[in-house]
Amino acid sequence: MNINPHPMKFADNTTLISLIQDGEEYRQEVKELAVWCRHNNLELNTLRTVEMIVDFRRNPLALSPLSILDSTVVTVETFKFLGSVISQDLKWDTHINSIVKTNAQQRLYFLRQLRKFNLSQELLKQFYSAVIESVLCTTITVWFGSAAKSDIRRLQRIVWTAETIIGCPLPVLKELYSSLVSKRAQKITLDPSHPSHHLFELSPSGQCYRAPNTRTIRHKNSSPPPGNPPYEQLNVPPIVQ
View 1 (cartoon, rainbow, N blue to C red):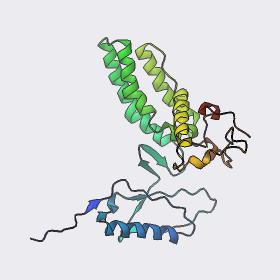
View 2: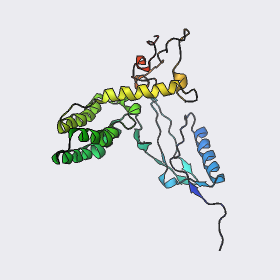
View 3: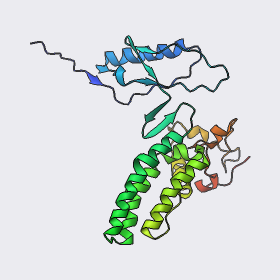
View 4: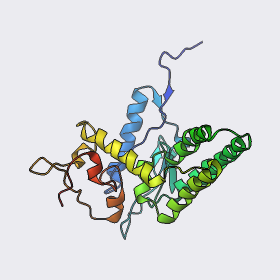
């Protein structure tokens, strides 16, 4: 019996992000990744590998299908990455649909059942915070600033419904978003090794942060920085425009 002394392992949640200019450089990076995995006893599951291209140019490049180890990779318009459903057009309606229909509404049923059992208001609030609010706030610092107002209202209706069931006011999503982004931004400013640390640029006086330069609304509304949370929430002086 032959025993392979080099066990193979699958590389889970491996993501390659590349700027496509001519198409060939991008394919070379994918090829190098496949070679590196093979040399390190890792096997890419091409059946579960997908490709998504984000291109807002008027005349996008016509790219041929991507291949890995002689297997063609499926091109998709959306895919789930670290809890967020990312769309090809960088809109968040698909992600919010998954929150509302798949998670939040189903969990409201259990909140109603607990109310029928005459649980105290404090326990109902704890259940809401742990089971429903946690779902609404998952990766909220990524998508809330760029989400459409209609989608935000759909999420807020979940909060309003929970308020009716529990019988007391609950934090609105915008307040939760501002609080979480502020905490995230504070951590970034204190961590020079963070990839977004350079986005917080001090003014020449060193007493306040400059406002980020953006050319599109999509970039301006994205977060963490540059994003919607006001810089005064970072316990620093106002932004220099």
